Length: 482
Image (cartoon, rainbow, N blue to C red):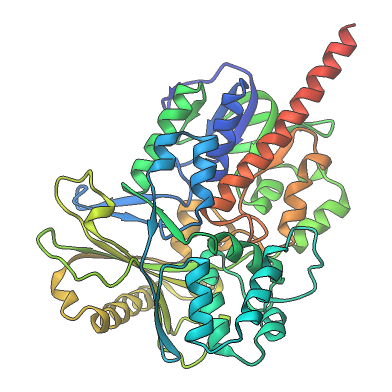
């Protein structure tokens, strides 16, 4: 059932899930399908986490926040753990463009086309290119993590900054990976994309989340929004439930879809954890954040097709530090043509410019400086967009923008991280239930478990862990009775 804000919850559950990002949502649906009682609690007034949207001008304009693109694996995951209708609404993005001083390339982002571009546009040895793709395909979580992304590219394509840019820039926008992160954080994600291209969701994020909510309710998940959890209850090293608005709700297990640091440091009393575990948590580095400029066209306006994803840069070379600089040189435009939302009676076209950013840069500004910097970002983005779409300013009806501070405000992520934690966060997340029995985590960690596909699949992984835990707990209770 869908609880109202004022409703009291008097039931006990097999699982309570804190947060409704794609990891929390997918875990909830899998557990419910497997006949476990599930309560899903969301602090905000809608589900989805960072997979979200917002309206402006009394719903005249709608903007998707993170519907930029994901691998074809999302279709398989949705078909298996959600339903056929959701999976069938995942459609391919066929026109991805790169525009920068080193090259201008159009691709469908498939492995076949990428190899062709690397060989013919960059004049690389075809055998070496295939060796590179084969090397990436063999990567897994248990590999030696000492090789960095920088070393990976130097190994296969030494001193080819242009090749590095073509191969890595899209992944930097997908998960915040840098040249000095472990190569595994790039290789696994890139390999996922490099099967059959980039995909998006027809109908927009709002349609997706509504379909997911409807299925959750149909499968018996209880949902309460506007429900910020105050504390995870832990007794004798075991999760027992949560405190919500002063009330205690009991459960056999708890899954947190919050950031791992928030889960341990804020939702739990740290006295329940070993010093060694707390030290590992303390050592986790948060990933970077992002800025976005949202632009909606007038209903009667139209633009020529210039691609669905357009990676642009004015920098003469590629460096991941440049992607984070407040003096913006690189922007990725996600262009939502009217056909992406066929259900709308009035055609809508929107453009979202995304830029990776550091939280610290924006948090250090005074209120006045912040507003000036935000206006500068909007103005410079509009000026740059004019070079791609002449006279676009006259066609735009509404403009808004978000910064890392905006991300923190709405997601509650520490430092407004858009991509969760660096790689070391994965180990702490996956072993949380070994430290506190019945307590699990499915937030964005390790750069790999980020993005739409990574988040959903991590929800499945942790749902399996929860089922195993509940089964063993049930077996133990049965044995005790006998």
